[in-house]
Image 1 (cartoon, helix red, strand yellow):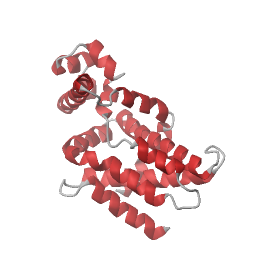
Image 2: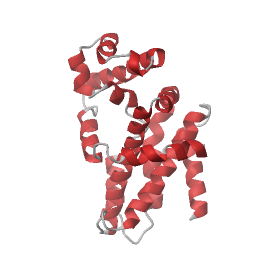
Image 3: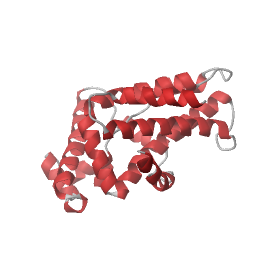
Image 4: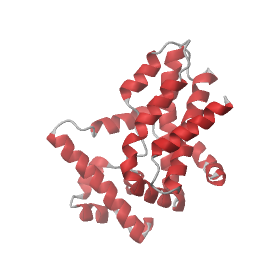
Length: 226
């Protein structure tokens, strides 16, 4: 585990150059379920992710094209482009978690004098709850991410975006500039690293324990060193 986390460091730094958390949030909002048409769009999005994963596991990253993914999913390449900019983006998927906007807002508006860590813990715990039913999918994605550095960079970019979102909320709570004050960024970085380590452990082990259980264990360790 230590070797995996250490090996990720360079890619984690590079991932800071990926699109902003705000842009990612807008893309996710475009696919938020709200009625029959939105549910149909979400089903198509999930199908494209699932088919791309299956094909690349079978043939390798260079052995699969967007046209082949689209054909296997029963849609046109143009429809694929409505959901993803590339096969790499489809392979990254919508995991491992997305923050609840209301809980993130509660952190931002909380009293600056109160320790924000319990709220941050609750935010992360809520964000991973949906992933538990997708352990096999997440495990397979991890296999591909370890095999192809470009996919690992995208995963780390996802975690970097989560860190940016949390940093912004913590800075607003403290009434400070996130760019000039180290506190919000430091707490966000430690929290998201805790999430990332829990994710790595969960996808490396069997599916008998939930993502949330690994996250809780990681936070217990974190409290012990504070």
